[in-house]
Image (cartoon, rainbow, N blue to C red; front, side):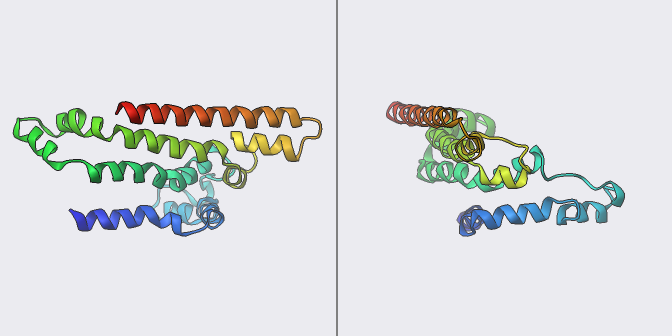
Length: 188
């Protein structure tokens, strides 16, 4: 229903209305050992107070926060494609006896594939180049490509050529991703 779709869309867009630094800091507060999530787990009784979970300065915290922050980049292209899709195709599939799974697999998925590909590219690019979020939530232990490039340019003297190589390699990957998207879009 349109009312529920609009509410869900607002919830997906909500992270865009706050700064990345504020969202990262909020995740840092929520995931720390004396944070909100651990407090809830202790209150429910799933975790003993003396054995609170370590969810920050590791890969888990980085993945949770990056998923939250990058999820709208994946959802919005798919939502746009699904909104434009002709609803009579789904009805025709069901009228011909297809169940929900077959309708999804044979009708909806092929028609929304360009949105999925766009979403993957829109999510992959910021994920590959992110360096502030993994630095803050990973405690410097999680190194993505953006962290490595920043390290070679800012902290390592004498390794500017490695930073330059990684930057050029990243640009080449991005160019090929866009070329692939354009070819996929023309075929689809």
